Image 1 (cartoon, one colour):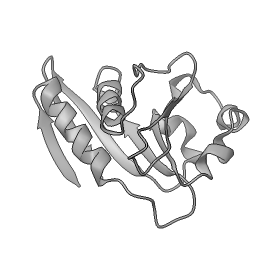
Image 2 (tube, one colour):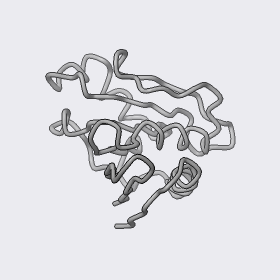
Image 3 (cartoon, helix red, strand yellow):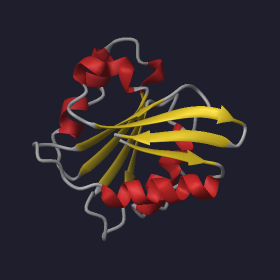
Length: 146
């Protein structure tokens, strides 16, 4: 596990860019899935914005709290064709994700799926990378990548 202490958005951007560049297709079938763990305000969405930037997403990335899922087209030079950002905070039952096409999007190997609050859908999460966020103070975040 790699551990970082970010003291600025610039440092978080570098950590997110390095993380995005380190990703490859998994040894298993299907999409690459990343779980983003941490309390509200711990930096998950900020990290996501910079992962998207590293993949060449040109749209503005915002937390999909109310829409649950946002799908972004990545740069043609990216190994992934789509970045799918999911905020499972409002999910009450895993079946809700299934109805949103969970099994279809996780079956496609060119998808990178990043899930905020993955513990809400733990029963249907495939093997995945885990990134843990901890709010230290106003300007500092601990980021642990497993």
